Amino acid sequence: MPEFPPERLLIHDADVVVTMNAAREELPRASVVLEGDTIVKLGRATDIDAWIAADPAQRQPHRKVDARGCVVLPGLVNCHHHLYQTLTRAIGTGHGRGLFDWLKMLYPVWAEMDPEAVHVSTQIGLAELLLSGATTVADHLYLFPNGCRLDDEIAAAQAMGVRFHPTRGSMSVGESQGGLPPDRVVEREAAILADSQRVIETFHDPAPRSMLRIGLAPCSPFSVSADLMRESARLARSYTRVGLHTHLAETLDEERYCLEKFGQRPLDYAESLDWLGDDVWFAHMVHPSDADLGKLAHHCSGVCHCATSNMILASGIAPVRQMLDRGVRVGLGVDGSASNDGNHMLGEARQAMLLQRVGWPGFESRADRLSAREALELATLGGAKVLQRDDIGSLEPGKAADLVAFRVDDLGHAGALGDPVSALLTCAPGTVWLSVINGRMVVENGELKGVDLANLVRRHNAASQGMLRRAGLV
Ligand code: ZN
Image (cartoon, rainbow, N blue to C red; front, side, top):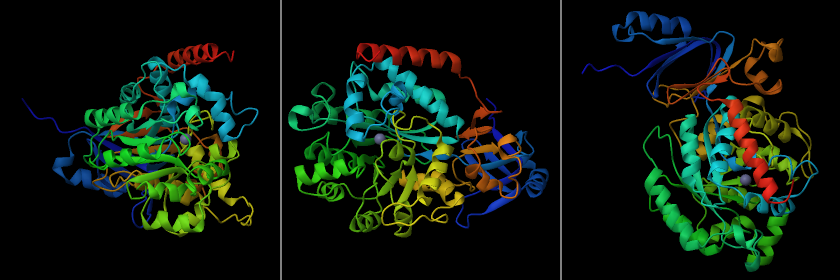
């Protein structure tokens, strides 16, 4: 049998290629060469053309994409999400509810979820994420009613071609034990740990350029026990590169709950359970103390900032600038689609930039608190570091072949060519024109390849309406 070379893709003559390499180089009029799942070369378009012409090994045909009029970036990394929540958008957020009231309203609806609902909501959320520039997505599924399994969202995500970090979430402390969720949506801890081990052994791939890594994610201090937190950490650490994830320091209600129930602030409580380390990343961290920031930096634990969700649920403003200045690893997440209620990854980077500039008690308003480039870095390299990945987040030879291109020659960017990179966030956030994940074109000419979106939306709305009906909300 003849051996065929891996597919070669030439992204040619982009207006700017934003590398996010160590020098944070931005290359004007540049090209990127991909071979199979890896970036092999990038540089000035004329230099790349000459390299291809001069090297006989490069003369085998490349698929060439004309990227004039585009800014090319590393694929964006979404570090925190609950894809299933696309099923319950708007009903808890339109009138405005704080986190605890919002959760108590939605738990009974989520209890009606089934495997079809998990599958279709995963694909709906990922479709929006892919079209807004995400190429790597971490998800946190923590309810498994009616036979749902993590396997349902994994199958759905694999069909979409995304680089996926599903976390096996859990809730084990129901209302009768002093927790927030109703008893009927929590699981037995032995079953949680057994299933966590099963999904790690079935799906987890620690290898470089892995398309799927599992994490373990007890949901929050008010829905799992200290034992489950400890045992989840022990289990995750018995494997290679299985991350640990949870919500922490999201609201002042949570801080009060931890002080009353455990006599400790949230991060001190996490530390007492062995939940500090470079394998841990926390969603939100809106209310850290100064000492908390020091601990996060010292232990290299990551933070996923979710600006939109924090605004919708009035949780507060996370001190991202202080985190960065103290050396804390920070990435971005759109959070669940019932507290956003969208999955626009580039838009989330814009929200993070805008929110940091606003003043709040103890902080004056400052336009220079977070620049557009810094926000883009959080959405790419920052997220990659939070997920402990050194193979994504920047465009460099040897890194995984994940990149996105946004057009800047369109209506929304007219007049913005003086700084097209900043324009990605200062102008209204656009839709990707091209997305390549693991060397494969997932979005081409602004359209998701091979996905019947109209049919997906119909199936999703049918699943959503069924859940709302069964929960008595419509
Ligand atoms: Zn969340």
